Amino acid sequence: MDKPKGHKRGLLEPYKKEMREMRERGFSFQQISDWLLTKNIIVSKGTVRLFLK
Image 1 (tube, rainbow, N blue to C red):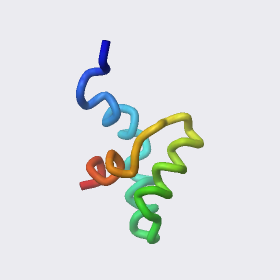
Image 2: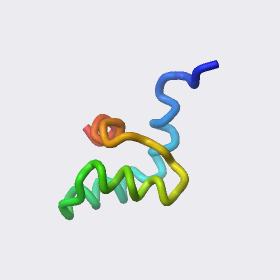
Image 3: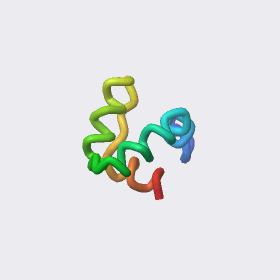
Image 4: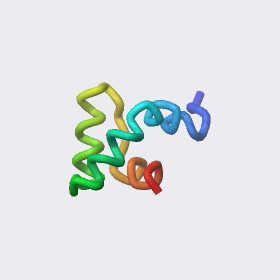
């Protein structure tokens, strides 16, 4: 069974402030995606981009 749409949003929400700060400091969406991987959260750079929109 597929995960419900919006599932990733709930996983990313606790990191939203840090992710926004990373963008302000010039990090790419890919770099943020790689950073989330260190927290065992697997998302694409596109998902990061859409989340921070």
